[in-house]
Length: 142
Length: 142
DNA sequence: CAGCATCCCGCTCGATACTG
DNA sequence: CAGTATCGAGCGGGATGCTG
Image (tube, rainbow over all chains, first blue to last red; front, side, top):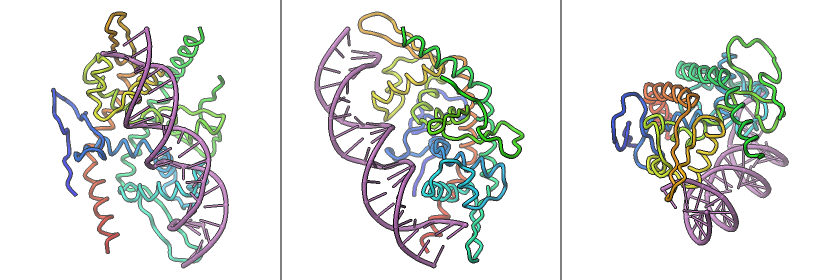
């Protein structure tokens, strides 16, 4: 597997960490930001990370109960992805009935920090967005 | 339209801005974080915001060229959403041929700041994630 | 309890054609 | 140039049933 990190076509000046990232799948170039966005963009992943941020260790069933509305299938898939990305650990206790515990890694907690930042921004700015939406509805009515 | 901001079921203690947010669509409760995640999670929205963060003002065609791989349809939809949310402004110049300019609002630039944070985190931690993935591949091979 | 396998519906999105 | 309108394939993800 061969990857190139950074901007495929470095046109213009870019002072900060913003890359012009293109789709990782349709091109043979690779960009980190797209990848993280892909993870953040998965609603269930975010839910799972936040749950584990608040509880340290959780079992499969506990996560299922906590993440309201998630299907068993999606929880399985989500946890598998997060484990593959090294964001959480999966510990199996070989006993009957089986017991599996999930826990954020250091990397996972690091990402959690970012999500908290994001949620704080959301809380602070949501009223702006809601107002903008309502104004738009009014505008389209007349 | 009636919305309630915050946690539908305030179980346990939550010290910071993390809400246990449920799906805005399947429930009649509303939570700001889910809404912002929905926006962030839209890959094309992120591309558009970053493009406009680097260029101040852009026309439709310029955005289409800059955001590699986006279809004309999705660009239209994306820009409409972002405008409705008050993240960018759309200025029409009544002339032939028509000319439309898009520009981030203050709110949009504020969100851009968050995205930059995120991209910096991604750049710093991406190698961790990549390594985790490769190790997982090796593990599944044997 | 903690999953995996399968089926299948619905929505997203790309492709295409047309307009002011 | 900057869109709108329509259609159809693809697949994300829910429901269900079965295992160790």
